[in-house]
Image (tube, rainbow, N blue to C red):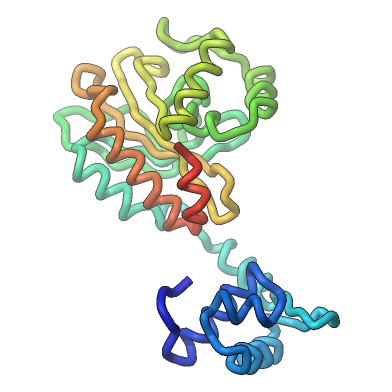
Length: 257
């Protein structure tokens, strides 16, 4: 929502429309928008005429069907990777590490974007590659945001297959790591998916406030200090920027670590 008192007519209409998403009574919409009731009432009548709002018959107002129509059209063209690109590139530029963005797909995570780091080597990962949740920093960051019941179901279905000698195969150990990831806002992969690679990852949330996937920085293990507070802060900050770009509510992000 805009800060301060909306000035232009478009600003006022958008402020009322945004308030309408959370409030139905005229008094509450006026309070949330910071506009006089008379102005809000006039704007609501225009929104009703356009199909962006309708009167519920009990003195209240609700979002109209045209909002759903537009939302459907927008989401059909929505590319999370494109919206995340600026934050991902900034993360690569600040750290020099390879950056991945993956979206959860069932019991796996699928890379939807990758920006190579500024190192004399390249990661063998690729866009479209699916990776396990329990062996990757992104995957563990995602699991840390799920309920204990859902995590248990994923473990039961997918198992905890060892991809390297460092892979976690004990559910109790994994649960402890997920609890730490949930509390700290990030997860690590210490040679668990590839013996030579280390990663720091954080969860990304969508406009519904649910975890969508995650981002990470990756490098050869000798080249990445997994305990670096500076690098952890960069990853968490970038994940927040990506989440905001995808419409995640800021209040949800404040809860994620």
